Length: 221
Image (cartoon, rainbow, N blue to C red; front, top):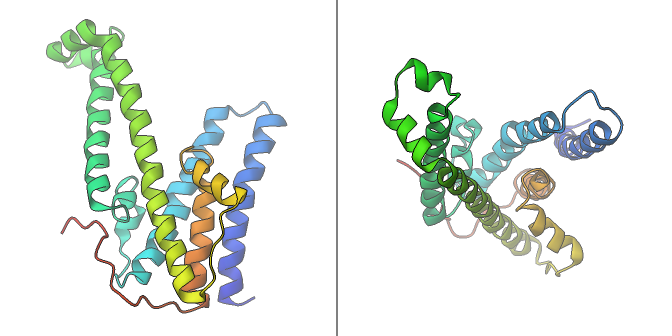
């Protein structure tokens, strides 16, 4: 089996494996909690699928892939539009702060008691329910923002595919489902595998070369 076949088999195996894991553990066995299954899917998405997307997306835009593509959350910021990436970074920072306040300041929060974080405890006691609602809202908004970011990436990848092949992509129910899946964290990997497959074909199989350098990728330095 050559390198091309191995890459395609890896993508197909990852996608099929995620689907089989979901149905197998959810409907056949009761020995594993659903949250564990979700964690496995998100781990595969974070440490295998997204780094592969970043690698080939960098290459097709004339950039050298780095190890930053393996850093959770940050990896997404490097391929999203700059304005969206900065907004997401702010939301993730806010999420972390709210989570710490709620966790450390809760009445049963051991760390809050041990370190005498009285200010945090007072804030949580006064605005506990409000902070929890704000945290939930921020998580929902950031999830939709992440979906929008990957939608931008997929549209760009589809544009590359059209530029290379000359084939016009017609809208279909499958395309609609791909975009809907981007906004559902557990099922997002289905669309991400589709993006990965297209990028692999352009970068490795078809040797796609961009006609104009893309400077929209978000870079910190």
